[in-house]
Amino acid sequence: MVDADPQGTATRWAASASDGTPFPAAVVGLSAAGGRIHREVAKFIGDYAYIIIDCPPAMDSPVPQSALLVADLGLVPVIPSPLDLWAAVGIRQVI
Image (cartoon, rainbow, N blue to C red; front, side):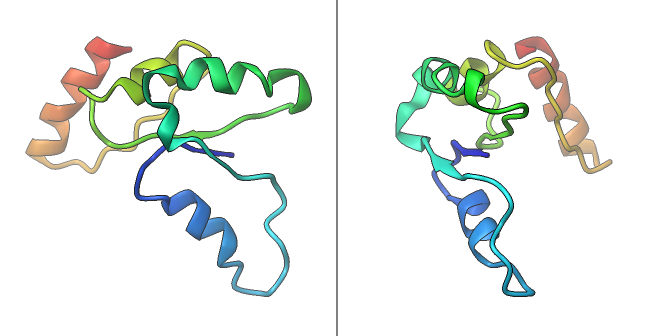
């Protein structure tokens, strides 16, 4: 799992295993990579079957745009509210 969000929520989530067992994946913090995230993730592609990239929720950020360059699949969680659906139009254009 690549935590590319400056808030570090994926890293904190993985560290807070509720039952005391370790998170079953490696977590790499790459929020500083910014628009070069695709280059950093490309270094790990041969080592893992799956790589999940947690990006900041901002369509104008270079991070999600860069992550999409190495992605086979992009998931964009959207809450069915007018503002979120409006924002989804912008991310669709980015994709």
